Length: 111
Length: 113
Image (cartoon, rainbow over all chains, first blue to last red; front, top):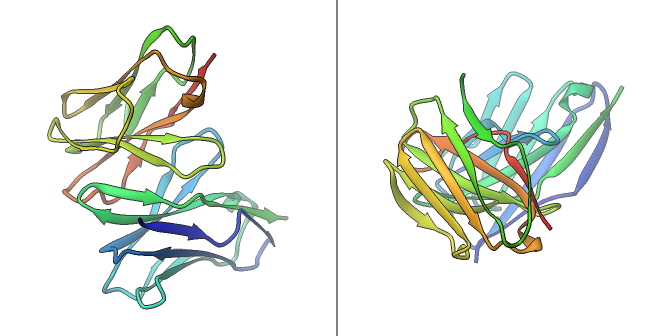
């Protein structure tokens, strides 16, 4: 079965630094991969989508890479701010309407 | 109202009760989803409706019964639930045929006593 892993349960960084979150998957070749942000007690919010034929995607301070050979995506937040503190979810398209999610990485940005 | 709205936000029910969760999307999307999020676990896909037709049923127990009367509304009917069904139930919608860019509601936090 498809398996999706996010590198760590929690990540602590200092304000102004770059946060790097990792998503690894096995047993599938997804057409695209997505990243979402979730705050406590709220639903996830879509951030970025990257397709299998794209290496990198950027949006403001966010950057996503997608390596289909390594079966890995990296999610970067540059010049991080305390307001970036949240849980970040990696999501893999597995066919049709099915999207499976990783357990998430909780990011804490200290002022 | 914009986006995806879910009611109620919180629900406490006994194992013998019957209740319903409601979801409404104001985005003109053609697909709607139910996801379950248990503590410290990934989101689990439960059901998907596309153009009011159920297209995915992810081996969900029959005590959960979805209903999609039109493309803007989605319900999840609950009966004889178990304590392990306590979780955050999230509704989402998307435009297009491949589940891209899901827009989620804030969820219903369900506690089964």
